[in-house]
Image (cartoon, rainbow, N blue to C red; front, side, top):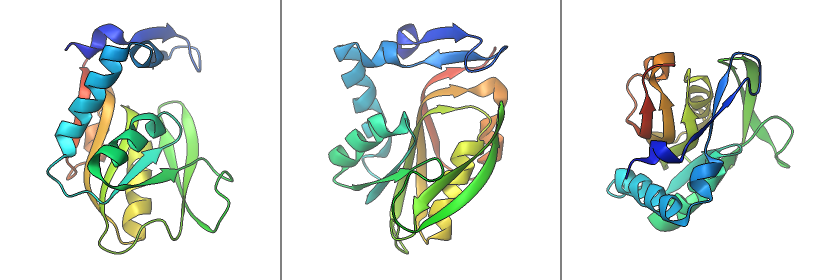
Length: 173
């Protein structure tokens, strides 16, 4: 299935000059929704994942479904001050500014086998921050999966050494 046909471009969102890749058009189509979830599962099914880390907020959509299908737990990684218990924080840069992510300090145990999922790989800052959080708690990142990769922003360079999977790759702006 050509998943790119289900992605809508929204110009100048969230800032002037940015072309936002909107996944809601994929999510609202039952066939595309199911097929994308199945393909993401196929990427990770043999890795013996025991926890899926979903990055706020669109990473929660398939992250939770993947955890269920893989028989794994689900760990949300969120923007600052959204998690109620003690957290670990990692700041990072992204294509249009800076931000931070947090994870509960008790969410990952040493030796956990982790799949990190988000909707989009752009410059790699968000995913790299999630990797640092997981690894600081003793987890092993076995794979990062994304619906979309903006290859022209070279996020893979920031994530060298990790197994990266994406359903859709855009290699030009």
